[in-house]
Image (cartoon, rainbow, N blue to C red; front, side, top):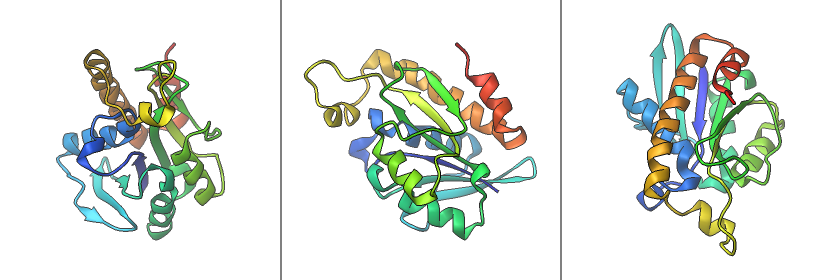
Length: 187
């Protein structure tokens, strides 16, 4: 079984905000598979999909961003999911809007959801997709920026990025993450 966790904040007031782009990818995958996230466990919503002989667990922690690891770790333990079978999707201030970066390890880079996930997993060595949201304009607080909605033209770009990330996730079901990383990390 593989687990794909998208990070974000619960509640419709956070829909289409920069911090919730991980949730958006999970929602797109659930839509494509026709499997809405209706199950609940460990303060998360999830669905299990059977794809090409592999079970794929789509997860959205409902802990709010800063406590994401509190849902991811118990879900991994409950379903006995190995660390190499985890993929976490989240927003990244250090990448321009629309840029994605797949990595097999890394630091939290100041991202509180990733800090929580790394702390609960006990390692920074797990697969991730970072989705660029860019830096806030001068004078705007980071917290206000990440909780703001994308501008119209940015959202058009992000819809394409969400689809690209969903494609990468589906490809990971059948291929090693390194292969997926090499294909989707285009300059």
